[in-house]
Length: 412
Image (tube, rainbow, N blue to C red; front, side, top):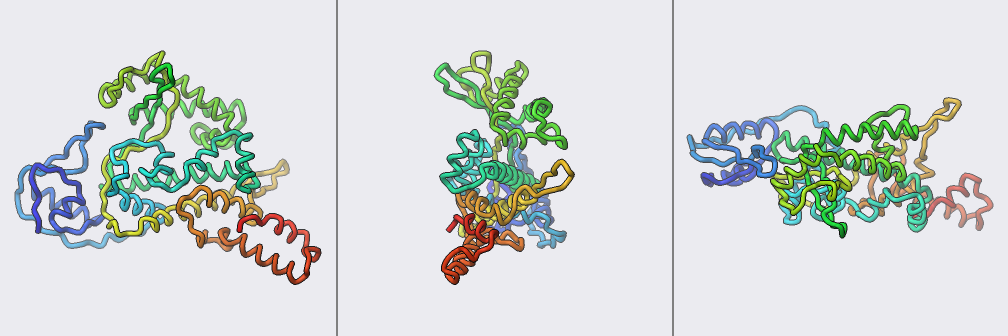
């Protein structure tokens, strides 16, 4: 058995590697940590950015020999099927040099950047935020028949990816597999040429949430966005309408350019960023974005593990839950009759086309778990209709419904 070197920082997985124990989770991990802590005098080093104790260890004196605990049966049911692939993927890529440990990144950069998860094409991802005039030719170029569906589906995908990512980090933190900060990046004008600086902090989360709630309610009063939702629940409605989103951004920037907010950000500049200027009237806040900083993550999965396979598994979870949410959307007419907004047959082509454009790991054989596999729908439908045409020699024998479906098929 190797030995722990005193006065050296170790994470949990590094301790296990040093003493030859298997990295585990749950009750087995708790037993291991209890044995380690009873065998040494130690302290937790401080995180220089957060000024809080890390979960890593620096051992100063060994009190007794380590005795490896027996592996326990953790029991219980696994309710994490939608986040397990994401957790495994994060652990797999944690040891790669490109993975940005200790750097805060916006959710867009986490989802689309090579230094993050690299799950989506950024150019396609940001297209959802454009105006209707910009979106129409984009959809026409890629044979997406309903620009509204594109915008709505992309919003659902963005929300579900965020939820899966953040829930994965939350569960991993409880297992001492990760340390992270969930905050905001505030961008402000550095000089007259338009150069931008930014500050990341989690000290203003409650302030941001309160302002978002206020401004969402004001826009709901003005535009009747929803009768059922209020406050920050309306953010999705706001983000799906570029012209309203622009007003929302203006309201938020005006509110954030307030002295108490500046004071907190300027303390952060002095502590961490050491920029040449503070936030003030001439260097005001221009925008803000949700951001995550991972300060520590255990690389507990062997690098021989199939990275692309894990990324594809994550993507398939996102596709499955997002398809279900889109196809379950309903609306009520003036007579009280309930209708589905989108149809699994009518809109299958658009759904698959969007997924193919967006995801960098696209599973051609993906089955979404329903009776209708959208990924193969178009080819099967085309084969069926073309076979019927070849038998008849023309399309005159097709029913009106079959002719409509034949015109709809566009993905080879």
